Figure 1 (cartoon, helix red, strand yellow):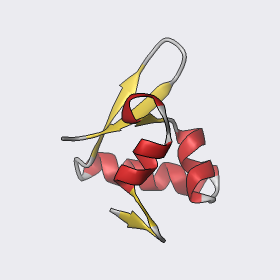
Figure 2 (cartoon, helix red, strand yellow; figure 1 turned 30 degrees about the vertical axis):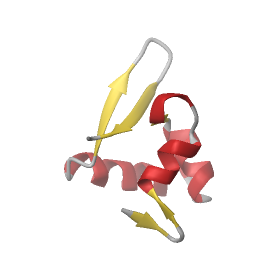
Figure 3 (cartoon, helix red, strand yellow; figure 1 turned 90 degrees about the vertical axis):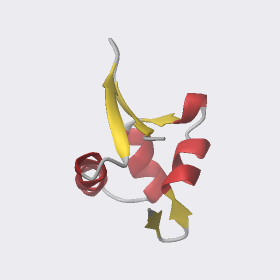
Length: 65
């Protein structure tokens, strides 16, 4: 999936550790509002492009392989 000139794989790769990304990191990376990033992530979850994971600290997302 492509957002401007950034695709989801690049977004996850740039997020750093183990190809996972948080909502906050995703919104900063796309340079969009928290709400808009949240809507994009929900659509990606519903279309089975990414998975959501919850740790003790935070919720994060990874690409489905």
